[in-house]
Amino acid sequence: MTAAALSIDIISDIVCPWCYIGKRRLEGALKLYRELHPQAPEPEVRWWPFQLNPEMSAEGIDRSTYLERKFGSKSVADIYARVSGVGKEVGIPFAFDKMVRQPNTLAAHSVVAQAGLLGLQDAMVEALFHAYFIEGCDLTQDEVLVRIATSAGVSEADARECLEGAEMREQAAHEDKRARELGVEGVPFFIFNRRIAVSGAQPEEMLLQAMERALEEVATVQ
Image 1 (tube, one colour):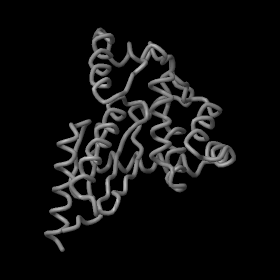
Image 2 (cartoon, helix red, strand yellow; image 1 turned 120 degrees about the vertical axis):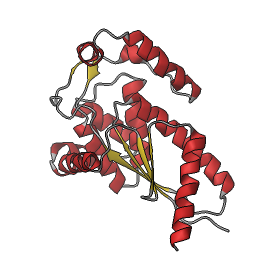
Image 3 (cartoon, helix red, strand yellow; image 1 turned 45 degrees about the horizontal axis):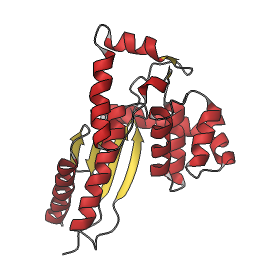
Image 4 (tube, one colour; image 1 turned 90 degrees about the horizontal axis):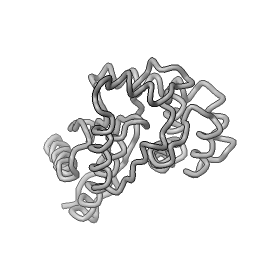
């Protein structure tokens, strides 16, 4: 029997390394899903905003200062080593040494929202993750965001209009608030067919199981 359509909503933040890892694990789960359901419609994946630091100023702060405030006496090197180790498992060469600025991510989320209207959301999210975690780009700078947006296929004119206007920022802020009202406290947070939720960058097998459960529940209701 052909599987029904599957929707996947992902609540995440661009500066969350586990969200980048979660994206890779989801991609692996989707590959397995397609192998199991070769005749099924392509799953619809949507990205939604969540700001880990919503109170941060628009210009961001020095990353070393941010880490000291966030982790205190904890060993940042140990934290980086753990994340980097998992990153290598999924093909992400985290370059934490290149990251010098911790940004407010509302502007980045606004270009993700705009890219969604153009059918380029996944490419935009991937480009932002790569720019921040691999290249160490400063996401507080509009010119940097414009360059990243164009690399994902968005026109320069559209990217500038988005960043210079208020509509997409307001939309991103609204969706961030909505996620918190729904009880989301950490990211990544996956929702399959608006029925099954999975919190965290779980292994691809667990994500696949959630997809199958979501399809089963839809079939039961029908």
